[in-house]
Image 1 (cartoon, helix red, strand yellow):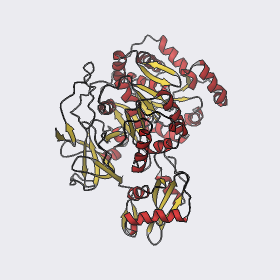
Image 2: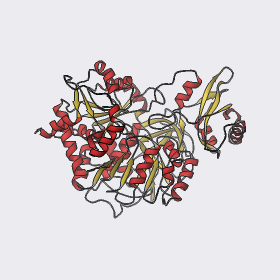
Image 3: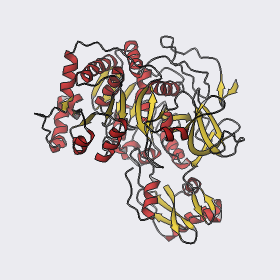
Image 4: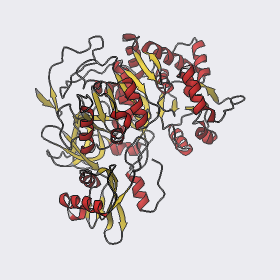
Length: 588
């Protein structure tokens, strides 16, 4: 074995898929260069459907959709899109929770040659307007119970068509009636008559089924296919244009971490499909590998626990706050983890204590794996680095994906940092974005061509690599507190506080101070059974004084029952920053 781009290389295994030679399975840290077929997202789905037609593609609240049927629905939907005026090069805004419609229309948009503009299903009206104005999108799909927000701004945007779908479209008659009895009857009635903009999902699908138009895929693998949005936790929110290649590369890289075929295996899909983690890891990767997507429409630990217990999936993925919540779930206490082949955490730093406790939690319930932390950003779709199985290094986020190079540069330069020296984490590889949509100046700051001829994404994250090629993430470079002339790193302080046996999670921010410029304040959530009192506060402070310099030790600790989170479950430190400055928190 030899090291190349911080990865160990060995010969291809005997278990590679010769029907689809780009699907290879290697296991731990053993990645040669992968093959990336010249196919669009739709063509990757079509390939899986033709190879495994009777395999289950989607499981949704008791409804199962086989791959051959999913492909049929996508083909019909593509024709339906053409019938309502959508054409190649147009941008279609998808404003849906994790429901079958989202998967169907995503691949249908791609077949037509359009771009899917993915936004949060509970976006505020002005957020919807921003995303559609930015991309000049004139088409949107939403649900009947979320239409109100679209309706509020439809005239300002100049929308051509609004497709309305219902939860019951893909539920059994019994479950559909149950949904109507509990939630559906509360949904305001939508007046479709005499409104040429509104289109029912079922009507669009019916039109597509009757259409004789033949649709040929006109887009290429490196063309733009999807727009996702940066989290907005630092700086201005931007639309990130990603290509077919970006998503296909991510899927094949992710699948290659397994030691055997995963056709027919089940992936829990609770991460929202408007986010790269949900769309890339939990949806497109299973589609490429002909595995089953278990759609969980509600982002909650309890809903996850119920579905997990029922379906016994082989793979699960989520943000650290989800795993912390699962540890407290009564349903998960009774779960059998022997079914799992992989459990992945990403989207935010995984506290070592959460990993340790969840690993023990799984082992006590028959699990034979450990929680693997990944690292990435939407500018590379999502994950581009993953901790290998059975090679855990505390504090590290793992090693780069196949064909992905990580380098540490002095911030803003092309000067590489030595091993174990912190600098800016930069990434080069096939999952790197095309651009920030309609933001050439912002794009030039982040997506840079270096003197080596490679395109590098400057992440704005600080960290280092060790002599074995493991990546260590420290913090967002912009997330620095200036206190008494010193640069203080909140993530470093949070790591120390999270070591305390009574602490679930913490968030550190700078509070404006006339003397220190900023004084350090920690917001802390305690585990059940521990009291929020001065003794506990002093116990945490003592731990901080043991590990941190005087200027890095918090001046104040405030106990909270919970911390604010972004729409994908990351701790929203910007909300707390705005709170301590007396500002109205922005949407996260």
